Image (cartoon, rainbow, N blue to C red):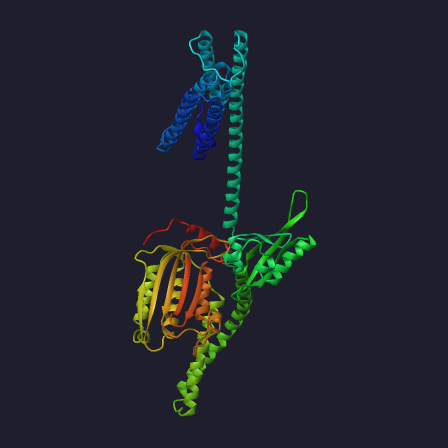
Length: 588
């Protein structure tokens, strides 16, 4: 049996509509009947009609209240159809019986049954109306019932053939109405189901499209032929530095991007010329004054007919790519300089050793040196030692060996460096060294000796930066970090060296990792450069921040599964060594 709840007109709005229509039709039918009875001045029949009208109102209200309390809507509709047929039978009786003009109103409950129960319901209601009509006809023809006569019935007393013909026509109308209403209801249900299916598919397509646009890492702007912005995904707003509230409906590209005239001009130019712009780079300036390089391509948006509807701009933030290019260029320059300088340094070191040895011997033989001569001799020896240290550091920087990967306990490295700093006389008197490491640290694949060298360089630099008394805090944590634009987020260990000494000047901060750049008297400027190169050779990151009131913070991020930087593992022996350590992590 068909469940009427599947139809839209069996929902709350449908049942409300049925109740309202039933009340209106009942009032109209009984109103017409009562008006005619008043014309004939027949108060007895009018009282009956008033009673039947009350039955209609009472049944309608009762059914609605029962449905509001959770009664089965299908059973309520059946009850109302049955009541309607009984009431129509009484109206037909009191308005002329077989000759009543109101007998045709049987089609109303048949239509309702067909609408709510489709073909089966319409056919069942039409058969019920047919049997009611047949039984009443037999009773009237047999004399068992006598309807009151009046001027509002067909003239004369019909014979048997007329009764049969009239009954045949009425029954045919009932059955055809039931079948037609049920068929129309089924077709409407199918159409509603198709519309609902298409609507669901459309909503799903919109959700999928919105999801794709929201989760795109590339920025996307779609503008109409009139310049109005149609779509702008979150990535585009983020890259361009535009607040979400600025994307009001109907805003043009020039209104949305008043501070980016080059981008707005390119979008407008593509619309005017109809020529697409392939991938190229431009630089935009956000509202906060930040310059951002972007790679952009602009295509035409066409309708099926080929007419240009607008433009589509897809772009990416190239800040990381540009930084990577600069690092690669810097590495290439340093590699070229290193090859040449290492050879020169090696050649300088041999005569320097001879000079230092000769000066030592000469000083031993000239025991009567005094005054300026003694000071000059000491100066030569000190500067010779300093020059030797510079050459040693430079050779270490220029000929950085490849990391020898092995499971390394970062927590132990931090504890050892902290212990070493605490027991250094010059440091322990002035600086308090604290360690705030996680209670449980993962082992990472790294070169333990090089990692200790990085931590020691950063620790010594941080302690030397403290004026008077201060604190060095070494902390570590496991984080998820994206180390490169071409790599996803991965598990890393982040180690921070924070001191509360004077901040690094803003003009010095960009150069702290450059070789031979130093602000310390007697420094070589290679300590931090060597540390940065070691971290990069492990595929990690090293960053520095220094803000007034917050101190200076050096952060080293090393991947748990080390992937050395490009070019560090070209030799087969190193690759085999790296692959040998691609094993599950071991907990400390």
